[in-house]
Amino acid sequence: MLSESSSFLKGVMLGSVFCALITMLGHVRIGHGSRMHHEHHHLQAPNKEDILKISEDERLELSKSFRVYCIILVKPKDVSLWAAVKETWTKHCDKAEFFSSENVKVFESINMDTDDMWLMMRKAYKYAFDKYSDQYNWFFLARPTTFAVIENLKYFLLKKDPSQPFYLGHTIKSGELEYVSVEGGIVLSIESMKRLNSLLNVPEKCPEQGGMIWKLSEDKQLAVCLKYAGVFAENAEDADGKDVFNTKSVGLSIKEAMTNHPNQVVEGCCSDMAVTFNGLTPNQMHVMMYGVYRLRAFGHVFSDALVFLPPNGSEND
Image (tube, rainbow, N blue to C red; front, side):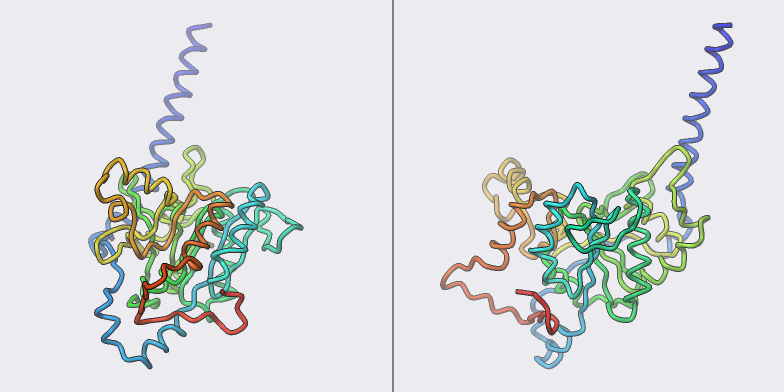
């Protein structure tokens, strides 16, 4: 009897492992055949010389045409971070809305009525597309631990056509699946939003659940769905090849630079045109806000060739 019971348990365990592997491979290999038509590449920000070639009238028109809608996924436990994000960088979005797992009376938010991060992300993207597809051409999604410099995001996107399927940020490779990490923030063009929206009701290609046993994180799930739509993850870098979407905080990045590049801590740390940092506390959010938007070194003049103006009536400072 013990022998039969032992054999049964071994069978169950082996079966579970086999199913998990099949589920994982099923997700990872999606769209592999179409990969030859869209090789992953590193997207870089425009250089300043290119901007200077644009006339002043064209620069002004560009600054007005870039409209970024910000999606922040939150849960009640994030209330202190939520408050910090609301009071800091999201004021620089053309519009920012918070999507909560449940109704929260303290702050205004859109109730997703689910605790599952992938379902929250799906619902938030659908809501944003259905309501704002004719008003915004770029959509930026972040967690409440992320700090974003929206002006740098707009600068990075300056020469990118939103009618093309862009899906960019800090890319990570997991097996054959390449995805943009939600920790650094995710950017989708309006074309990618259209393609994603067309698949949200197709469970065979974009399921609400990643698998019966092997559950993928929400950013991997998104990559799987977008692969079916012919949209692939692309890493965002500055003109020197440094990442502009960071999955770590400034403090941790500097600490690592002090170890790895002791003679070039500042240069070895981060891009001058960084878009995001992650893993921040509420206090660090306000420190970042002060450093990015308030602190100035007297005598140093930054003559940027392009200025991104806030929309009329914005609380943008």
